[in-house]
Image (tube, rainbow, N blue to C red):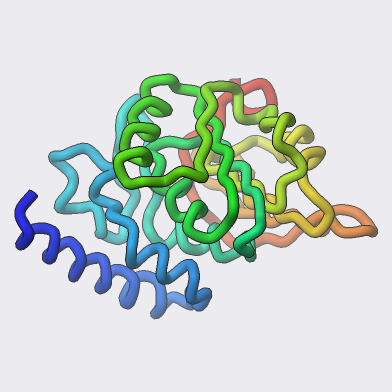
Length: 218
């Protein structure tokens, strides 16, 4: 890729952050810095790279998608992460969301059900120098108990209900972000573990591919 193309991508990425994120209310400086830094075009198929910074999700392999930039920023901001936090991501997909998370916290553990996607994401993340992201090929609806408790858990696919194993692996004060609903439309929920129990907030409507697994869709 030529220096001119790289410069063009940088300008478009800056515009994406200004227009799609800041104007819609994304305020966390660390989230905005991550979105401005990360080369989203590296995570999409070559023929779609020129669309990488558009205000839309894009298809990747195996009928999966890379989420709309605003949704990535919104979910990341809603986790309220700090540098010492540990995060679980359910649904690695392209690896882009994991990269954004890795800029904000100590460690990201991400689970992908489709081996082909996990392999491609791992290759891109390695090329970009991320050493604090660990990928597993498994049923993400079961979480990843070995590394619990998590300060943040983010699910990047739509679930019929909140998987109990994910709630069980959430640290005190930790937050779980998950789309819950049917195949066509979900509500983005934030569930926070407090000393008095789980507090649930509805952050609005969204649309994700179905979450597959034991505690997801069949």
